[in-house]
Length: 369
Length: 134
Image (cartoon, rainbow over all chains, first blue to last red; front, top):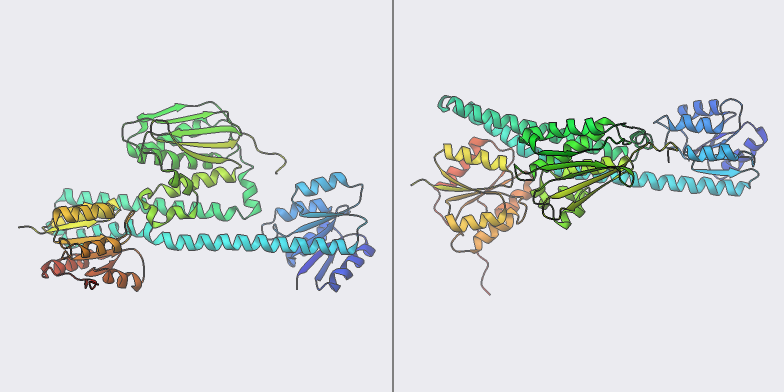
C-alpha cells in the first residue's frame, strides 16, 4: 500500500482529502504544518507528499526546500495545493522542484488523478534509474577484469621473475623490472580511480541533489587551472614544451577540481595519441554557452564510428580496445561537461589530429532550472 | 638453433613482459599486437610456438587459431592461448579452436614457461581435426 503524507492546516479539507485517498487504498499520514510534515516525512518516508502552500509553521514551499535538501527523502514526489492568490508561491514551488500543483477549489477526482499520475511517473523514473545502474554494474563487471588483469599480470609476473631468478639477475635488470612494476602499478591506480570517478558521475546523474550540486560551482578565471593542469598532464610524456596556449581570462560554471579533471584526461589523450614532438594546442574563447575550451593534437584522429561511440557503454567492448586507455578518459570528460550543463564534441582536424571542443555555461543558472 | 616464439597480445606491457621472459629463457621472440599481424608473422617466421591472447582488437584469438589450423604451412604450430575472461567456457572454446592449452591471466610465469617448454618439446602435429571434405 502506497503511503501519502498530507500536510494542511485546514481540518475540513484535510479530512475530505484523507478520506478520498483512504477509499482509493492509500495509507495516509497527516500533519498540520510544514514543520510537522518534515518530521513525519523523515520518520515515516512517504511515497508522495501533498501539501498546502500557506501554513503558519513552515510553508509548503519551505517544506519542499527542506525535503529536497535531505538526500534520504529528496526524490519524493510533491504536489502543492494552492489558492488562486498564491501565484508567486506556486511559481516558487515549481521552481524548487514540486512535481505538480492543484489550485483550490479542485475536485477530489482531480487530486486522485494527479496522485496516480505522479506515482506512475515516479515509478517509471525509478525503474529507468535502476536499469541504468544495472547496466553500469554489468558493464563494469565485464570490463573491469580485463582492464585490471593486464597491469596485474605484469606486476605479478615481474615480481615472480625477480624472486625466482634473483641470483642470476644483474642490478640493472632488477632495476628495469622494478620500473615496469611501478609503471603497471601506476596504471592500475589510475584505472581504479577513473572507474570510481566515472561510476560516481553516472550514479550522481540520477540523484537530483548531487546533479544540482554540479551546477552550482563557478570559477572566475579558468586560465591558471588550465595552464597548471595541462603542464602537469603533459609532463610524464615529456611534452610540456609542446603545449601551445591561446587562453582568454574567462569564467566557467564548473569547479576547479572538475575543470582540472577534464583537462587532465584530454591532455593525457592528446599526448598519448599524437607523435612525440608535435604541438598540442589549448584554446579558450567565448563560446555559445559562454565558455569554450578546445584541445587539438596532431595525431591520427578517430574514425567517425569511434567518435560516435564515445561516452556510450560500447566504448569498452573488447573489439574497441585499440583505443584502450582513451575511452574512459574521454567518457569522463564528456560526462563532466554534460552534468555541468555543457557539451563535448569531437572532430578530426582539417589536416590531421583530433579537436575536442568543450562548451560550458560561464555562469551558474540562478533559477536552478 | 634457438626456438622461436611469437607473442600476440594487444597490451604492450604484456608483450614486453613475455618477450623479456622468453628471451631470458633462451628463445628468440617475435611480437604482434593484433590478429592480422599475428597471422602475417606466423606465415613469415614459422615460429615454433605461438602465445596468443584471446581478445584482440581486430580478429579474436579463436579466429586466428582456426585460420592457422586451416593453412597447411601453419597448421602444426602449437598455440598457447591466454585470456582475462573467467570461466571454463573460454578454455573449452580455446581448445576447440585448436589451442594446445589455455591459461588465465594473471598467470604464474613459471607455469606459463613450463607450458611453453612442454608444447615446444612435442612433435608438431595439427591439434584440430580437419573438417571432412564434402
